[in-house]
Structure formats: structure tokens, C-alpha cells
Image 1: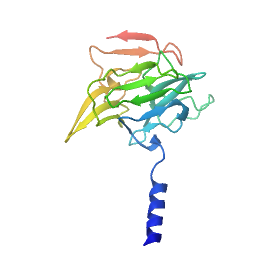
Image 2 (image 1 turned 90 degrees about the vertical axis):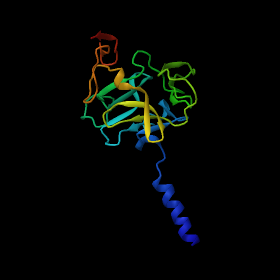
Image 3 (image 1 turned 135 degrees about the vertical axis):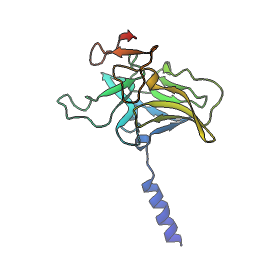
Length: 191
């Protein structure tokens, strides 16, 4: 019995993931770090999309969603097809920057000086069941789970960039943001 218990504990230790890299969900009180950008990545359950920190320059990163599989590129591993960025106009540096889902329900991106660079603006009452989930559609959704019901608090599909994904609505009051260069996303177009 003792041997079985030891093997069972070892099996659990080996089979449990050590990082968020195989998950599509970030829970309240958790964070993703630029310093662990190759490990702290959300991956949609179908494996098509990834979300995490994307390099936009020397020691400059944005929280982004991209297609997980990329074509080989002469430019190295940074040639991802990015479909959405949170802080495209204010990149953070590598040391100490984090994307954190607070227990208040707000999703914030802090730089190394702990200054909030970007936030969803959902700070309100404590919402312990709040999650950030990367869906198979490429939509990053901040939601709170209740008994048999999920309530969407914020979603990346409401703030499109230069790429519209299938199932992403383009509304009358929305706008697209076009890139003026490979790493500069400042041109905007209103509908």
C-alpha cells in the first residue's frame, strides 16, 4: 500500500502541468510574467491561438494574441501572426512586468515600476470566480462564473486591431487599428 501511494504521488507530480502554458484560463489572483514569456502563455483548447507576451522591440513587449503555429521565417521566432494587442502603443520591459488578474475582477498590465500601463477597467466588487479565458476563436474574455452561467465583463473582440477573426463582430461603433509598421500600431479608422 505504501509503495502504491508513493507511485501515485509521483504520477500526479509528473502529470500535473508546471506552468500555465497548457491552459486556456488565468484565474483571479494569478499573473503572466514577461520574464517567463515562453512558459507563461495561454493556449486555446484547440491549440490554434496563444496569448502572452510578444516582443515588439529591444526589451519591449506587449500582451498579445497570435496564431500558435507559424511558418518558418528568416527573421527568427518573432515572426508571429499577431491578431490582437493590449498595449500596442505602450510596450513594457522584460524585468518585473506582469499581466495580473486581480481578485477585484480587473485585468491589469504593470511595467517594471508597477505602473499600470493597460487595464480592462473592471475594478469593482470582489469577484472570486473571475477568469481570463482564451477561446478557440482567438477571443480573450474576462468573465465571471456563476451557477450555470458565465457573465462576460470584457473581451478583446470588442477592441479589434488590424485583423478580424471569424466570429468576431465588426460593429457600427467599432474601429480598426492598422499598423504603420511591423511594430507600430497607431493608425486608426472609424466606421
